[in-house]
Image (cartoon, rainbow, N blue to C red):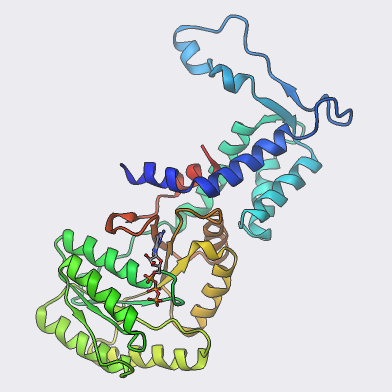
Length: 343
Ligand SMILES: Nc1nc2c(ncn2[C@@H]2O[C@H](COP(=O)(O)OP(=O)(O)OP(=O)(O)O)[C@@H](O)[C@H]2O)c(=O)[nH]1
């Protein structure tokens, strides 16, 4: 199955929420509602559909031709805005998108499909500048620091990335930097075994910075292309976490003043608007250079990715739509936008 088919299939909860929301807005109002009766008309299918090239260009499927339509007015626009806020796009983004959709279209009778197309185009426009795969440098080792709250999917993302880089012929070393959580270390070891990538571990509770330094030494000695460093995600004590991350950075810079070359923040889509707070917090703790959004499968909150892109403009390097190695892929804005609105 292609990643897009998978994305579309797995984003169903987000897409049906937005898609159904648009259907409701256009089709809303009980039949006979005198206030909007004339606004919501069903376009009749043409009596004799055109044939030939003209037919192919203009002959829309009957279902579409028979779609309900509603004249775009302030009330409809407000409903659109509310629906976008409820689907996690955030107030500012929802207002901007609605205003762009309204521009030059007030009074026009719109079908749900037309609205979906317009919305997908707006979302694509917002997402295109941030869709950037993890940049690869010729620098060896390229150090990738991975941060995020516990449970966001850091371990899984490191495992998936390591496997994919390995498959692409890159040599990778992983450092299990969350030395407090034995379970996290074990998980990484399992992923490392699966990917055929060495995982550097340290005694439970030992200094993550010293592990990072050792891992850097090994990666240099092995001539590894990439060093991926997992980190703790305990936000309960931000000061400690900030110091821990700063120390890791300080120590690896003794070996390479430009390291880490990337600081990836892993976010869990199911947390919805909370992902916004996490970006704000982690930007204070570390020099976040890009995002990975996990668990877009099975959540109705995929819209938060649009809010993140619009608000922070940080590159989105990859998205996760499942627990398997192949369930992490580059972020494709148009595919994502169309899947998200249910097209
Ligand atoms: N459905 C789904 N599950 C995912 C995805 N990414 C990660 N998970 C699951 O989310 C859970 C947490 O992922 P981890 O990778 O362990 O998260 P972590 O951030 O390393 O968390 P700690 O190890 O607790 O610090 C695991 O059960 C993963 O299998 C995804 O894209 N989709």
